[in-house]
Length: 105
Image (cartoon, rainbow, N blue to C red; front, side, top):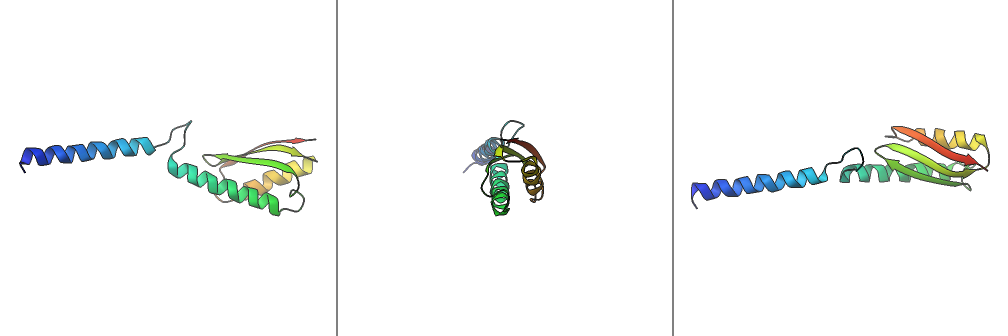
């Protein structure tokens, strides 16, 4: 194999690697694959913690996470439940902030 062919193949490998890495990167509106997995773990932990809280177990609380920001939505029966759900979510590791959009019905 000539030196030119070897350099061409090496350049092609670097170009392919660059394309793959750019494709996996996130931006402000999209998550990278790693961020998606991290957010899924946070969502699962928040849902579990809310379900294990006796006062919140039976209420309709939806949880979504994007880049560490947890959004709570749905309906609860009191303002105390709104506060409690927010506090439970904030207590989970790697939660950046909580957007508490719960509605008292």
